[in-house]
Length: 309
Ligand SMILES: Nc1ncnc2c1ncn2[C@@H]1O[C@H](COP(=O)(O)OP(=O)(O)O)[C@@H](O)[C@H]1O
Ligand SMILES: CC(C)(COP(=O)(O)O)[C@@H](O)C(=O)NCCC(=O)O
Image (cartoon, rainbow, N blue to C red):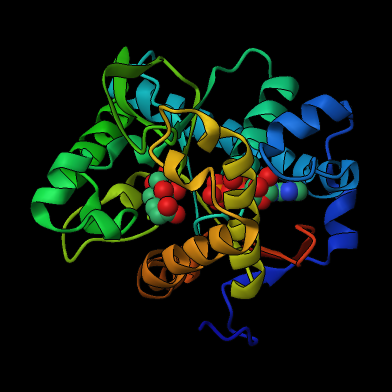
């Protein structure tokens, strides 16, 4: 664990100070939208938007503008001023820590404060190997571990993005069928910003170039493991009442379980898969982030650590 001393590359910004750094243009999100952004849990608290996510959007806006200026200056130097490349924001952290919620919030706020920008959200689950391949390799229970992804394809995707090509396609994963959706893809066309969200986005391969090498800004969302586990269990129970009822759901067999039985199943998945992945692969990437947001048990961001630049 990185120790924060006088020589730390991170500055701890008190939440009270951070909350004053928002853009002057306030964005008000209504209850329904806050609920939609959060998915299955409680709606994101309005104070969280005002005090944490709006200042974050402002910081990102500054950095994106600066990156665009640098890109234009280099393009001019090369005599190729039109060749813009998108800004890549990598958002990592444990399963169920709230990455999707934070990513959707960031996209929503950036789109509002800079409507002229095309902001895209891509999740790395689309790059998971199909279940058939995972079964063949004997690693279906390791979904989310680095080896469960088509890492070459993911790397090609970000390399293409950062080459500034017209159109890039990402494969699509469905949590309902628990597998890659064949013949479907997400088309990303000339984006200004791409938020790439996933458990392993900040990870570096052994000596090879990896996704994180292409990121312009890396955000790590953190929380106590006991809280994340609770959020995972709660989400699983809510899925059991909702999506698992669908006969097409991979987890349909869990729809009939009692609360206790469903909790035991989710506990098992947490202990066998998500916890070891967090400890072995995800948590060690935390010191590589540009910004670490630590959550308390109520999902409120309690600590903000920003890499000095
Ligand atoms: N800021 C937040 N406020 C309230 N609930 C949240 C917040 N962030 C996440 N949640 C809830 O926590 C659970 C996990 O969040 P999610 O975004 O799905 O995590 P991940 O994408 O990291 O797996 C979900 O049930 C979600 O609704
Ligand atoms: C799909 C995931 C591996 C996460 O994907 P990602 O962060 O790459 O977008 C994860 O949400 C998941 O489904 N894990 C499998 C174990 C489980 O059921 O929790």
